[in-house]
Image 1 (spheres, rainbow, N blue to C red):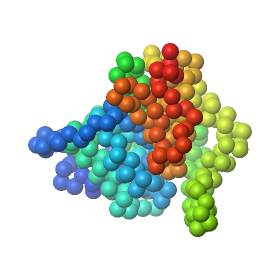
Image 2: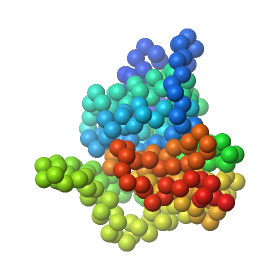
Image 3: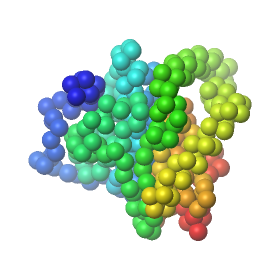
Length: 289
């Protein structure tokens, strides 16, 4: 337990004197709620790959009634190896705490990279609720199961050492990708993701993604839900799988994507800054009959 609490150092520092209590004495000034709910995951705060500045800009322009943090918010794996915590990452934590103080319900579902937080399920940090998973009810009455998704990853559950190795290789790819895109920027070329390209070319990686999506959707069906929102595989997607709405909100390392529910109940994947539409950006009413 002590180790888990020490791992919350970034959150504790951001909380300052606020502690782990609710803010009953704060004056709540509601933000303009442009969305019923926003779902983000895989921020990986504590790593050079986290695009914290873009995330702060996204959160500023997308206030919501409920904000779901769908796992891997803080990368405890990387922080244990090497401490990396620039001001922009602290600003993200402060923004989340400020949103909770202003009346936004902030729900944190820990993932495998921030699994230390699972020791605090049922507690609230600065108004941020820590839960094992959640069920979101859309305005039109659909139940969406919210889970990070690592429980459906055979590598995580059965060979954790292999997951750590894969994490190191992924970090190396991201580092190489940053240098490559610096060169592309000087040449006037747009951002290009090396890791996304490699994953798209490897048949086994594609099969893994498909198997993961099917497994998560099947569990949502078994639990009696209409759909599922998850993260973990860093691949934004929204599609129907055997009558279940599968939504993956992507990540904030490469894709900079989020899932949002509009006030009228439409679900949409957004990329920030705004780019040409992702193929799956259809309202939920069109995806699930």
